[in-house]
Image (tube, rainbow, N blue to C red; front, side):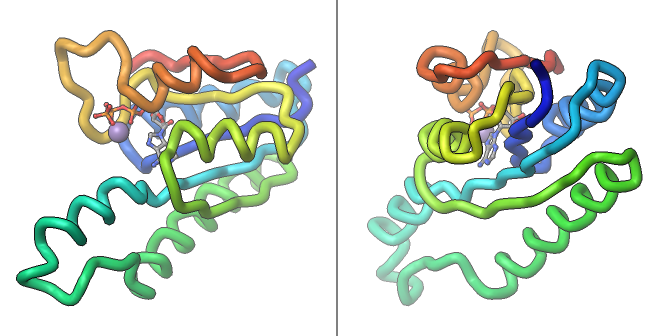
Length: 146
Ligand code: ATP
Ligand code: MN
C-alpha cells in the first residue's frame, strides 16, 4: 500500500520533519522514495516583472541549481542508507501542480508533505502548497504537522 512515496521538499524545517516520517514508513513496507523540489516560476515571474529594471531578468542560476541538486543528493543518500531506493527530481512551475503531476507520472502510492514550509506563518492552519495538494490530489496525502 505504501510502496512508493513522493516526498516534495522546500528544504524547510517542517519538510525535514516530514522526511523523518518518510524514513519511519520503512517499517510500514515502503520501498521507494521520489524526492522532488520545485522552483516556483511565480517568484521568478514576479522578480522579472518588477525587478528587471535593476537586473537582467531573473533566472535560476547554475549555482542555485547546483546547490539544490547537492541538497537533494544528500537526502537521496540518507534514504539509501535506510534501505530505500531513492531518486530525485527537479521541476519548475507552480509547486502544488508540479507535485501532483509528478505523483501521477511516477504512480506513487502516497504523497508525504509538511503542513507548512519556509513561510511557516503561525496563524495559518496549512501552507498554500499543502492545502492545494490536499484539495486536488487523487493520491492519499500524509500531512506531517509542524
Ligand atoms: P506558503 O508557501 O503558502 O507561504 P508555507 O511555506 O508555510 O506557506 P507550503 O509552501 O505549503 O507552506 O509548504 C508545505 C509543504 O509543501 C512543505 O513542507 C513541503 O513538503 C512542500 N513544499 C512547499 N514548497 C515546495 C516546493 N517548492 N517544492 C517541493 N515541495 C514543496
Ligand atoms: Mn511555501
